[in-house]
Length: 340
Image (cartoon, rainbow, N blue to C red; front, side):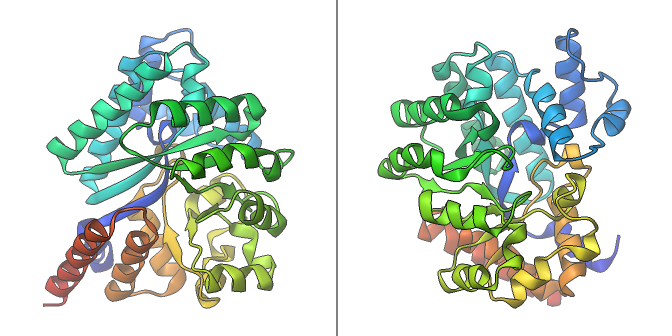
């Protein structure tokens, strides 16, 4: 392990773009697959490495949904959620906004109240036992259409779990225009939730514009193609609209060809507030520490630069002012002790 890798490993961090089911470790996935032997998902953790090799974004969605199929009752939901927090604690992640897709579970028969109770119970245990603060982004699976949008908005508005802070839109972008989801985002925003849709990962910058214009996005998930539109980059920079960048994910899903071609440098050079995230870490063979190391290499950062990147996530998060100041101070103290 290099000195920079060691610094990153101990660095207090926040993560803003990481998916609930997509964070299931091979151990948990294999355990769930063994509990549900009718699944196509391998039960051997080593075989999962081949299973999680994606031909393209569409293939990734197919594999992702096969793992979603393993989450069949509230016990599965609670187990998955708590174990994600345990993996985060090992990486010194202090705070995470976890993207949760209730529709994927409720349409498979898990009652919405039981689903919410399971994630909330895991959230409270994770904070008290592991020191990891979890917050939720309830996410519309775009491929499931307006039915899923209605169900996601209904659960958010009717049940209003304590940890819920934002409302998102994921899944494929091609053939799933952003404007059709405006009424559901309007309802969520009226409830006080923040707007954080995915946009511009596998489509062009026009999808990012749609997310800003129609969905009133406060952060953009991925936004990779934003660099193709200088006016858009300038808008994101001027209005301090952060991009949730996930380098390894972009390569795994073929949204970007190689890491050397990743546009993170262009984003930073344009003055955009960039955060670094892992997206679906076990599926992509990564974790947040690895993503920080990749970003440090692509941006030419030293330890102080990496600490600044960690503070970007704090700034872009939906923590309250006091919590932001506390975590930023912890990052500063860690960096100072490292220099000392």
